[in-house]
Image (cartoon, rainbow, N blue to C red; front, side, top):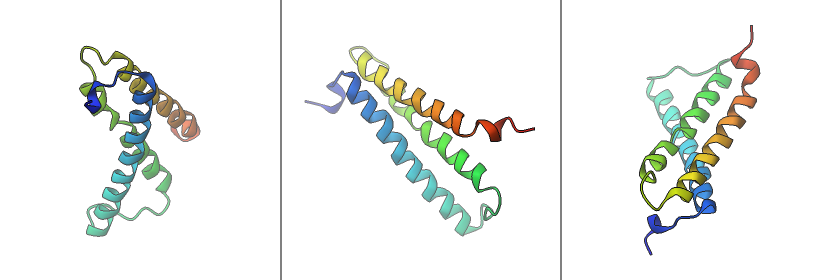
Length: 103
């Protein structure tokens, strides 16, 4: 059985959450390498903005799976990926609500 032949909601949820976690690690390492190479400045007080950016980029890694599973006979897996993405987006929004709309 091919990994893409599974069509169930829990499988999509697992893919969605796992891809975002792996994406966060990759983006964190990429930001670290860019800081060491001098491409990006070291963050002194802007660490919260950098973490906020890394988190939203990690959530966006699910776009690959959404495009991949947007085909016939994978609707339940696609639904799981989209649900996990929306949960992560809601967590991100409520976590950074005060900093986004601070006056």
